Length: 360
Ligand SMILES: C[S@@+](CC[C@H](N)C(=O)[O-])C[C@H]1O[C@@H](n2cnc3c(N)ncnc32)[C@H](O)[C@@H]1O
Image (cartoon, rainbow, N blue to C red; front, side, top):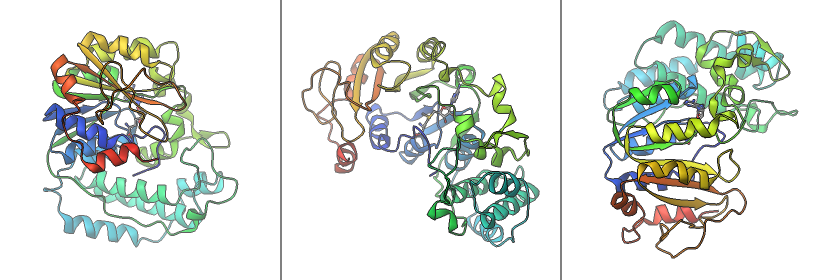
């Protein structure tokens, strides 16, 4: 899985458990990013729609959500990966832009990224393996990059991992149907089928994914864009079309309120943060149009189990929502009995879930 700002690694077990408790057979991950939530739901046998504006997120969803692991020819995939992994490097856009004009990759890896990406374009465009091979390349490049996990800048000194040889690994594909949709959630959501459970995890603040992950955008688009600045960001990062309403403090609350109200799902779970543009109290107000609302909160080191109303997921009585540092929230809204069931302390949590929530 790529390094990703706002990725919900620690919340995945909780979101998986919520799907199971809701008895959801269909689910929507509306800001899917790395697709880790969608993957967990697919692992639990739901049919998932994964949406994001980022082109690399659509590729990741094409691999992990849309591709049916039972229908991908593993021999063909293995052969393709070993062919690509053995290609000699060539000088291309990545070498010139992300290794010479900037320092995201060491030259030996940049040249191989150029060769592998060209070959995927030449041999697998439109093939069912295309998103799987692109995912393998993105993840391999992520393992040897020289950043802190964002691409607004690169490290002054090469990261130790950047010296390693870029190596393609086979992504772990999941069986079953699924759907990868590239597009703006505020536009796409209305046209999707109604689902049992939807998860909304929009950007919380002004940090743009298009600029923070411009290298991944370019690796997928493979359009050799003009660039600007020390970070060599794509010139189209300046276009209004690459901006998200959720990065705009003034417009984000209204857009989010409308999406929460309109999304076609029986139960809606919304992520929030105490550092976001929209506070938890406002999120609760927005979610109230869907029926009953419950809130879970998680701080950066431990599950603190705050809820508005009743018990936390571990069955403990809790007080008011805490606003201590780096708190993340899951706001659950929908039919009262169903939402209460989601947080019902009489449903046993597996040790793995409890451990994940309590882990620092
Ligand atoms: C907080 S991240 C989601 C992280 C994801 N849940 C995970 O665990 O990896 C927010 C995502 O929203 C996407 N995004 C931003 N604006 C969007 C929009 N208007 N419609 C759809 N996706 C959008 C970004 O590309 C980013 O991947």
